[in-house]
Length: 421
Image (cartoon, rainbow, N blue to C red):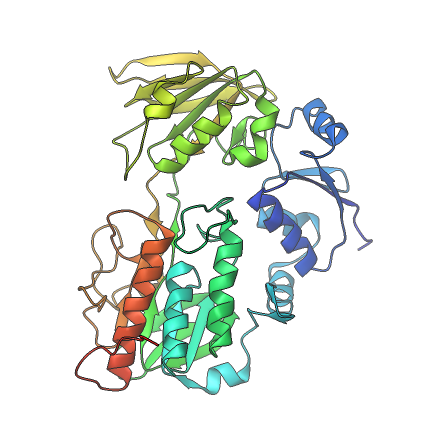
């Protein structure tokens, strides 16, 4: 197959753009990057095509909006097996002192009996790995998509204790992972297919083979619900967006709707109000967490609609209207130029556990105050358990508690041993 011509339209600070570029690099494809937030000519090129968001990738003239791995594989001529081989042979790279953190699974990994394995390399898993490796436990972190988790795709973190400067979620996560690696933790990129926790030595099944562990931490993240709003997928990148940092400039002096029930939605609405003529915030249910609406309530460009839902997104080439179900259960049709979605309903990605540990009706792993599951030597935390609010610092704290609990289990101590020095 001849080398394809690839053009990536990107924006500064866009996490999904980084995912596209990483995918292309990992699979050995060169591309031309056109940053639409820096060069107005590229911005105008997108608008001429009625594309109102980044990333927008052209592969031999065929358009891919957002990050769609299956579509990339098809247009680049990668079979499923080829894509897996390339992914495993060219691991995710996060440069720290010149070393790549995540490696592919090899025979050494499969032959080892680890003291502690964390499934998930996000803030919970990375923090757990720091404490476990520093506590002299032979530690392994398994993550199927190191740059695709909730923290990794967060474009700005300004409230993580001890980190005074604003950083991207990926920067913060990479620092955590690098610290764990400095203490001796191993990191591999792979998908956990199933687990067997019935014996003292736990078994974790990967496509490459079986990983063995004396203790396991379930630190997987959450996944979006499968149901989408009618029209959402059709108009993604053509009026439907998930990132104001990426796409706000496309909506200068336009009318947009923000749909969400959490702090992220409020923050994004405030950002969009700096650009847009009108921002309509739709809150489908009760607000989740400690959310401050006062800035939006006092902003003349913002309108707040509680208990309003988007039923459908419609248009021709781009978004033109939405069908709204009001708090009175009446349907209305609104003229809008864009829809930004930050819906709650994230569910823990724990399906692979089947019946290995106790979970509640929504899939959250049930744990005690030490984050112990009902199976001796198995722990869970972060988005895998039910927490009062989802924050990186809470997940990191869970990882620390779980690792200290695991150290007690592995070394058969009567009490947890804190790490003071």
